[in-house]
Image (cartoon, protein in one colour):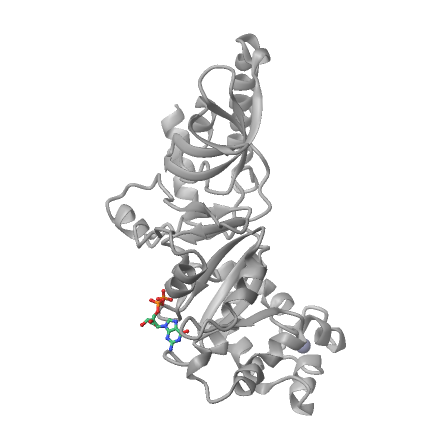
Length: 354
Ligand code: GDP
Ligand code: ZN
């Protein structure tokens, strides 16, 4: 009977859902929900009858998911291999990401080390599988910031890509930080800063770095300190070089997810948290290149695209998409030259692509 239910749910995943929470039951029919709830209740009750009362819970954080049922968890200053309580295995069989690196958990330390509870996530970093189902795979959770890395040259600075990453970060409730690398290739720092001034004026954190000259590395380190960050950006922008410079000892992951995926093993996310010497974590993940926008995010784009929400107050229609509508605050600002045309065009490109 369980199997049947799982199959049904799997079919339902045909629908593209962005940023699904595991506990989100909106997407199931009432039947399924009540069944799910019954199962949940049962397992809680079952737990109560047995010796759940003598659980001794300790809060920890998942650093790495080794397999679906085994995790490396940091509790206090130590790391432990913990198993996942059976309840989770049953309830979320098809969601693929029962647990993710970055999850805060309660671990029962009274007998064997068992994860008994996954605490609510502030956010999730997800990718969508390449198969027809476009199933969400959670790469990591509770991430503070995305370091959007781009190079000034080689490859050429691409503000459109930065816009995209900013929107993707904001949609996922993660703070975007812009890092413009390879500034040694620019004729002058002024020129580089001019390129970033649009974002700087809007209050974004932005650093200018070079792994060749060492410029800006300390500024970047300051931004990373005591936060959990993921590096994202065009390949060749210098992410590995930056990470090597920030912490030479890190052994970073390379593309693994897709390999696993091809083989049809859906149960692993294979990302992990690596601790910086200076405090905080690097979310090391091979799947981050695909971190992007999803079709379902289209509606939210107008609210999160850099600098648009304030201009939208002048729009005639409250749900103006700033594309075909008349009396649009954004279009007026572009015409008056107070909002850069290039950024507006970038907005339209993203809008169309969704
Ligand atoms: P990734 O794909 O983002 O990880 O980029 P890499 O770190 O592999 O760097 C790509 C290339 O850019 C390599 O040849 C690096 O040596 C070079 N590179 C990285 N950082 C800088 C920099 O600050 N200045 C210059 N001129 N080249 C850099
Ligand atoms: Zn408008």
